Image (cartoon, rainbow, N blue to C red):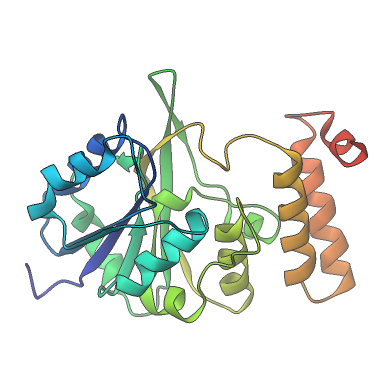
Length: 250
């Protein structure tokens, strides 16, 4: 371990992902850096996932397999176990797009930065597409970057764990909260992660809409901002799904 560089806690959450977890593990342990700890929080897999975890047990600093209350409960468990200055979530099926995250060393060592975020490569049907992070102000009404493509100061996550009131958008709730409170977000112009399309937050559903609208409305304090950013969120969805509003009548 390099003691001149900040320790990074990389957390993987898994549940019955025997076909994808190995690529995630290899993505981490084959990185060209050693100032990290690796944590796996498994939800009690029964499909062979644990056999793969045990295969790389000597490369994993901490792992546990037990029932949980959902993905964000598992992520909170990982945060509690984290000892690093920064946390990165690289969940089963996802992987780093860069071989050496110490390329971001200048940002890691900047005490004024709370969140480092970058672009992502979306993997769908074995095809990779570059998805650029959007302007930061979009965070007022929608995630402007992929969660796997960011690093967060550990103390922020320990002080404000993910809310279990949300099943698919608790990460957005967290980032909007700290953004409004004045945390400093810094953009790195590179792809940080490869995100496997098809996770719980991929696509549009009634639950997605209800959660996102609730988060926007609850976190913004003035009526003007509540209405403005609710409108911008819904307007953003229209080009992708013109039947968006029909979800609320079902």
